[in-house]
Amino acid sequence: MSRRAVEITPDLMLRAYGAGLFPMAEGRESKKLHWLDPALRGILPLDGGFHLPRRLRRTVLSGRFTVTADQDFAGVIAGCAEPAPGRTDTWINDEITRLFTALHGMGFAHSIEVWQDGALVGGLYGVRLGGAFFGESMFSRTTDASKVALVQLVARLRLGGFTLLDTQFLTAHLARFGAKEVPKAEYKRRLEAALGVAAQWLPAPDPALLEAEIRAMRLSAADEPTHGA
Image 1 (tube, rainbow, N blue to C red):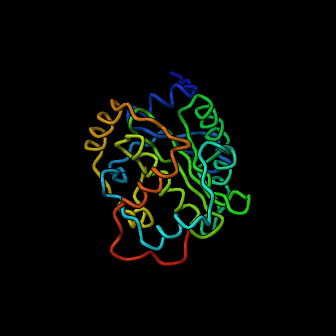
Image 2: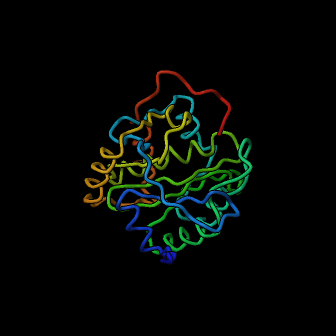
Image 3: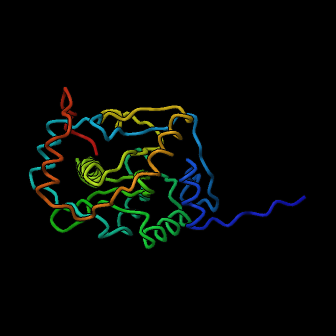
């Protein structure tokens, strides 16, 4: 009996995210996508569990970078797909780019852009449903750019009433900010609750409120190393 491939559409993507799944390709040149539903899921707590290093807070508030949202989604996803030190390949193929660009046009996928001297130097993108934000990927072309994007994302999510920030997997980099792993069953309970929250995406929040939210974040006991993304 033959198996017919199911066309992956933006609407199917949204249903999959709502069920706790997310897609990845095996490599940049791969033509297929695979659905992942890991036994352990990475999340970044938004209710005070996010840890902001003092040095990074100074950088975020220094004016060294200009941060925007949804101003260059194409540039951000292209930046996330490009090779980086220690990573010659990526899971973002043409199909991923097409689908997330479509979701962006529908108002469900968003980007945070970090600029320096008019150049895009870092950013991240992800998908939102209800009070859940599913972080997909981030990139950095200069020190601290992706970290600034992450802090700005968390501040906007907190201001907008989001309750879940999904990081898919736990990395040592994200663990420094308070990320943790939860079992699949617990993640899906949190996801179900978050989907019922009427959160608001804030691409251009009041600067004073944004700064106050960043200053209110819990500070890490120790600063991060000065190198890295």
